[in-house]
Length: 198
Image (tube, rainbow, N blue to C red; front, side):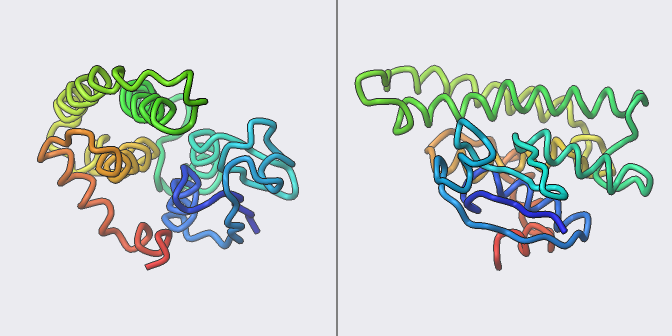
């Protein structure tokens, strides 16, 4: 039994979605960032934390990669095996989405409400919006025909990229039609709907 700590509205959603895609049983503890439940396992207080036999794993990407490797690699579900060329391409997508999309949205959030008010630079958001729009174009070009980033198989970076779509909408960031459609298509998956509590 896996235990997920973190509010559904945070990156903990990615972990819940992966668990649903893999058909694994889990318990979900809805905990706000910097709550005692999170600080107990992660000194930053950031969500999510996954407890595996009582041992904590932190960082949403580390968690969903671990889950895919442990429970999906042999069956070809959600990942390619480590050491394969396909896995190298998959990991390249993961790092691109983290560096060029997730990090941009997180920086905007930091300068909107996370950092102390005197440390915020609201003007940086114009540059971040430009970066985010450009990165969508690059991602879509690299994706090709799809329907997923790696072609016919949904993998770890799809969860991260698709999770950026509603986050961008909430942040009023520009969304290209094709990227928005990609996110909508993935959000209609039954596992996504279950993770969202729908």
